[in-house]
Structure formats: structure tokens, C-alpha cells
Amino acid sequence: MPALLVADLRDRLGGHGRRANARWGFLRPPAGGKVVWIAAGNDYRSVRLGVELTRAIRDKRLDLRLILTFEREYPEALAPLAELPRTGWGFGPCDHPSAVRRTLRRLNPLGIVFAGVGPRRHLAGATASLPHRLLVGVAGAAAAAFERVYPFNEEEAVSAGDTAAPAAHLLTLIMPSQVDPNFAALANGPRSRTFWWWHGTNPRALTGFVACYREAFPREPLFVTGIAPQEAPTAGLYPISTWDRTPLPDGALVAVDDPAWLPAVAAACTAVHFDARDDDCLWQALGGGAAASRRAGIVLPKAVLAPIVRQIDSATEVVRAWRTYRDDPLLARQLRDQARQAFWAERRLAASVRDELLERVFNWD
Image 1 (cartoon, rainbow, N blue to C red):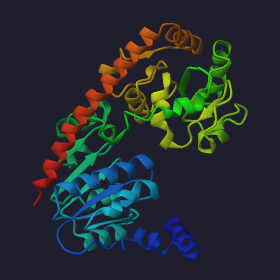
Image 2: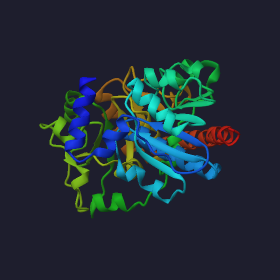
Image 3: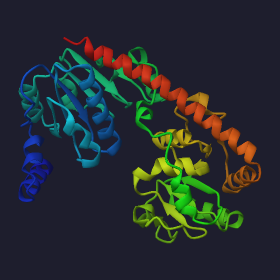
Image 4: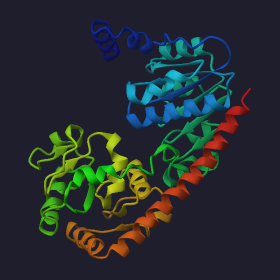
């Protein structure tokens, strides 16, 4: 409780009265009609998922009032909501019992959809009696308490048991899979270079990989995701968010710190290696057609991806594989085609699962 009061005071002194009011359940839904509450969390992925679910439900049910709540605001993700009628969005309540009770009293929702985040203890208990509850893209919650669970991967599906829909990564539906090839031309300039991509969260692992990489590819730029420039100050990472569209210097290490660039990077790179798990990044890589590999111990979202996302256990072996791809364009093209095929298979499944979710909401009454 003291932490909530401190946060409340900080928000009010900082001019964020709306967030402070929402924390205690003072939410105002749009006027008229039954309410469906879409509850997102504090990370970009959850809010983006919440936005896409809100848009899809709005297209299916014009009679409902929709309200999306979140714990952190991402204006670029929320921008599409401005065009939707009878739709509200803003910060959500904390999990204090009085805030939860006040929220439910003011919204009186027909149903609630948890987007990429499970309910906290008091909200879970207070919403147990609602007519409809869906859980989308998150594991670990009490799946039996939900009408239907929509897992993004096979681990989530196992934990959800009989309530689970087929595991499908719904965000593949909005991942760009075909991008303007100008990115590679701009990054290369007059030179002909091959691009590569490494994903991880351990700066020491990046340092070790770069040492091997530069012996084999002294000129080719390496794109890095999962590590911000300030997290690896000795690596010399160049943030793509500051790129001025001039050709990248030879041997540049480019941190993809702006997610808007990720589809173009995925399409431009011949191959990617995952030193840490990131399912969103993996599907984007496959959609872009990058030949993919992973470090030992990384669990794939689906077992069917095992022959496509090869396990490679050392930096030396990764670099050796990449040299093979560079020297054998036909092999590289075959692997890239397999990656795209896997992505499109997932997208088709995601479309069918989304349609089932929307049909379920359509029948709510």
C-alpha cells in the first residue's frame, strides 16, 4: 500500500492525474451498450496484442463498448485506436481490492480478455463470476478458470490443458513479411556485402561471438537484437535508431534498438543465430526469410521448427555455417524458402484461431 500511495503522489505531482485516477479504478467506459474489457500489461508486446484484439473485436461486434487498459503507454502502438467508434483506452487499475471492485462496478463488463498478461490475485478472484473470460498469449495463469485459452506456443498449450485452442502466434498476422528492398541497398551503398544477424541478451556472449565473426567476415555488418548499446559499451554497437541512411561502414555492429526496422533487417539478412529465446523475433526472422539457428537449450515455440531452426552449439560453428551459406547461394536460398514456408504455415493457423476467438466473442450475450 505505501508503494501505491507513493506512485499516486508522484503521478499527481507530475501532472499524470489520469493515470493516478485509473490506478484506483476511476475508469470511464464509452457510452451505451455492453462492455468488453481488454486488459493488457506493461510491455510493448502485450499492449500491441491488446490493440490488435480490440480492433478485431470492433470489426466483429459494432454493438459493444470496448475498453482497453494497460500499465504502460506506447503511443505508436495505440494510435490505430483513434479511428474506432465506441472504444476507450487508458491506464488500468492496480490490484488493490478496492480498486478492482470500483473498476468492475463502473465497467460492469460482459466479458474480459487478458492480452499477453494474466490477472493478478484480486482481479482473478473478482472476475471469476463474469460470464466470459479469455486468456490470450500467456502461460502460468489458472487456465481452468477461463472459458478459452489462446496459447502462442506449445508450452502454453500444455499448461492450459483442455481449455486451450491450437497453439498459434497471433502476432504473426501483423508481422510484415514482404518489405521494400531499399534497406539493403541503402545499407550497402555501392558495395556488395552479405548481412548477418545475432540475437541474445548476454553482452559477454556477444563479445565472444564478435571475435569469431570478425575473423570470417571482416567487412560484413552484423545486426544485433536483444542488447542495447548501453548494455555492451565495449562492443561498439551502433544504434539503428540514429542511422542517417548512408552506407554502413565495413564491419559495423548495428543494434536494432528500434523495432520498426526489424522487418527490413530480417529480410536483408541471410541468416540469424539465437543465443537467447525470443519467439516474436524468431517468427519475424522466419517471415523475412532468414536461415535460422539456435544455441543448445533454447526451446522452440513449436517442435515442428526443429529441423528449420538448427541447433548450433558454438560461435565457431555458427560462423562456419554462415560461411557455407555465403559460398553456396543455392543452399542459402533453400533454407530461406523453408523459413518463409514455416512462417506462412503459422500465419494461416493464426488466422483460423483468431477467427474462432472472434466467433466466440460474437456469440457473447
